[in-house]
Image 1 (tube, rainbow, N blue to C red):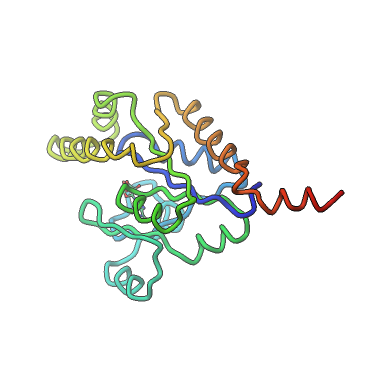
Image 2: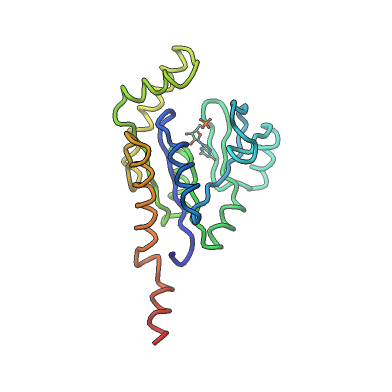
Length: 203
Ligand code: 5GP
């Protein structure tokens, strides 16, 4: 829609359901692509290498860092996560919208690097809802759940750094809101200078 693709940054605490929202947005909108990050963490059940992440050894990740292959990277929960530069730049140049699902430190770096990116933070309806989702979804022990909640609270405090918040109390509504944000952002006049010129030049 706009002159070039939009770079969309999506963050939210663990357990907020951002993966589900993202999968719907991706499968229902052909002009939206989700960037696949590299990570050094272990693959979880149900994850697919090359789709959820590229699961790599720490040594490989560090080599890629040395080659300046990442747009950004961060350490989270003892594991490294990074957004590969080349595919994202290629998709944006093609005019595709690209979503990065990354944590708050990475989002901060992307905002500096791409000031015209669009950032969205997915919030839970409340911390107690987040807690029951975290307890319900996993076999994690009490200590892990409490640690995640502590991290979640710190991350949620930083939602004010984002352009938009979407409260995930209903997946359908959250998906529609994310898509609505992307559509409206693509129509901004400052993203469509080329289109405006074309209209004026084609009498
Ligand atoms: P998980 O291990 O639960 O898949 O992800 C942990 C956190 O890392 C999530 O907040 C996720 O959004 C974030 N994350 C995933 N990929 C990247 C990335 O490439 N860069 C950064 N900075 N964070 C990422």
